[in-house]
Image 1 (cartoon, rainbow, N blue to C red):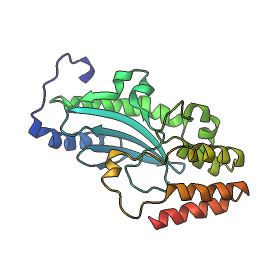
Image 2: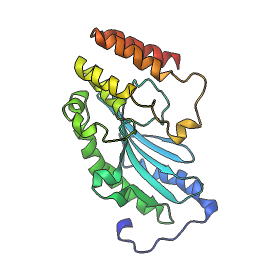
Image 3: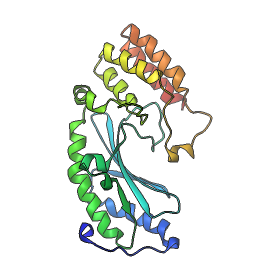
Image 4: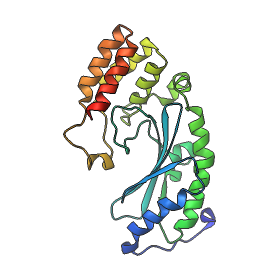
Amino acid sequence: MWEDLKVYKQLDKKDINLTFKKFGKALLPDLTDYSLDQTNSVIKLSRQINQLEQAVFIEKSSGSYDLQVRTSIKPIDFYRRNKFTMLNIVPLGDIMNNYRGTFYPLTQEWNDLAIFLTARIKNEIECYFKEFDSYEKIIRKRKEIEPKGLDFNNKYELLIYAALKTKDKCLLSFYLDKKMSRPTMQITKSEYLKLDNNEVNEGELLQNLKSLAATSDFAGIEEEIARAIKFE
């Protein structure tokens, strides 16, 4: 078993990218309700439930053996449509209560690592996902999601949607104010390579949502988001 290994055999650098592609495909057979999206540096395993996308991202640093495993929970109708957009980013190590549990080496034992990470997804990660698998649960457990200190890793976006979907005017206005007081959403490395001139103006969109929230116009907010999606 991978976790019992004391020594790992390093891959030749020329084999890293090809092995990474094989690694992504090796994760999928035991995760039958997930779909796979993959680039040269990112593996995304995702599924949809209750209008939410639950995803596991495995990212490889350029020219490196190091893998980073993080989770994302995102509305399926999020106004930024890039498939590699991440919201409510939580590292696997946080879920496992083990900081080292976020980072793994891609080595010749990659198939054993795939088995190990598949088990982590089916156990620890899916238990975490279950705690936040509806907008109602997200609102009930919002204190666990709200950013701490100067945490800019895209949590308010999920909370804004949860307040909208549960028609909570006060929380919607609160989270819009919080979001608008901070810089616009950070962009992941993978997204940055794919941006184009059709990127939605987030500041303008949020201001429009704020005006509609003031009158509890939830239908209008849904329409505004739909227009942003269509624009992209």
